[in-house]
Amino acid sequence: MWRAVASNALTLFIVLFLLGGGVLIWGQRQYSAPGPLAEPICLRVEAGWTMGRVSRALDEEGAISSPTILRLGAQYAEKSNLLKAGSFLIPPGASMEEIVDVVTRGGRSTCGTELNFRIGVVSAELQLREVDPATGRYVEVLAFDPAGEAIPDEYSELRAAPDLRFRVTLAEGVTSWQVVEELKAADFLDGEVAELPAEGSLSPDSYEVSVGTGRTALIAEMQSRQARILDELWARRADGLPVETPEEALVLASIVEKETGVPDERRRVASVFVNRLRQGIRLQTDPTVIYGLTQGKEPLGRGIRQSELRRETPWNTYVIDGLPPTPIANPGRASIEAALNPDDTDFLFFVADGTGGHAFARTLTEHNENVARWREIEAERQDQAQ
Image (cartoon, rainbow, N blue to C red; front, top):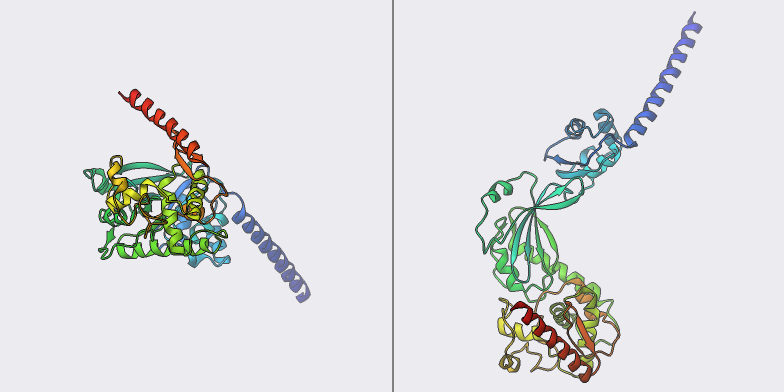
């Protein structure tokens, strides 16, 4: 009798063991298999949520086949306690394993609403944008200049969105004075900037911030990022450049930045200035004249007068030899790289060609011919405008 009981118990144990193993294998396959989500969604995870709360939200959206399997899978992968608050884009067909990775990976949110304060060379603009889950791209909802326009009525409501993220973006070629002045209009930042940062020391880039971020702290991050870029690119500079320090390279890069309208021309424009420095020819570049007149505090808003080309300022490269004493703007990474690794050319001149780019020349005769063509283009445009 007891042998029969023992045999039956052993058989039952084996069956249960095999069933358990089968269930485990089935659960693992369910966890890693493509999910039922047909369209992308933006999943909002609030601070303090648990993986259980997330699994229920996903189940309500029809994104997963089993909240239990998601919770157990996250626990088995030791990710249950790594949940991040934010808004996350969940793509169609995402497996539970992929979803858990998205909401625990860290980093910034991948969807939702974003307020981007863009500081440009001419003006600034507050842009409220939302990610379209179907495309993963931002769609502009509202845009206005907070310093020069009336604040739209709907701004306050959009500004209070629970998943709103904040970003400050600097355009290449902005001046330090412009940055400090425009940041005063960013109502989500705090504090004053006591000292104007050195020209050229701020990295034109995009910075994610939060409500209450200090303006001084943000400026410090911009400076730190620019210093890292300069150190990295200085270590990889070409041999034989006529700049002796990283600071001189930054001055040259700022001139390249202000003279370049077409990104692909940066290295060629840089080669012109490098060739002139090597040969002891004055740089004779208009943006340096303008900086000497405005100190980077405002656009000139008109053409340069002949008297201003002859006016002596520390930055007027029609008057001084070599480089100005400071940068004339904040150059981006590409212009710094161009200044430190210019094209190998024998060009000494360039002038606008009417397309946004430049016509380059090796001799003064060639240059004068290019200038004459540019004057013709200008005259034609004036006639068409009348």
